Image (cartoon, rainbow, N blue to C red; front, side):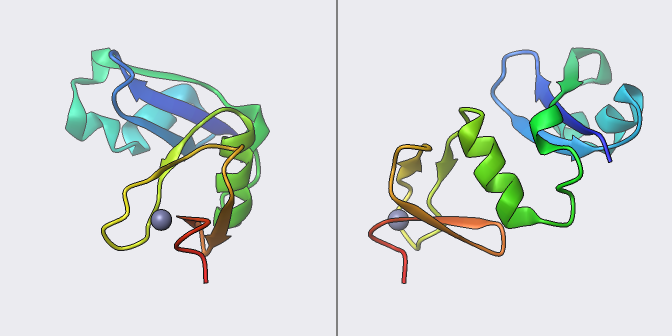
Length: 100
Ligand SMILES: [Zn+2]
């Protein structure tokens, strides 16, 4: 399925949503809770196409595209980019220190 990069107008909240159409991506996104529909943007994120059932590959693809994530390790909160040592388990990302 087509992947969409959905975000609010300030880019504060960002998410990958899978949908056939832009309007569907926006209505399926969590962004509608963050902001009004008119302030939510969606653009194609072809790097993530067809990864909806592969959460770990999706996270890796997002990293390669320049996203960063917060470590899922308890009380860690480290920001992880593609260059950082990391490991991904079931779509959750851990920094080098929290990886087991
Ligand atoms: Zn960590």
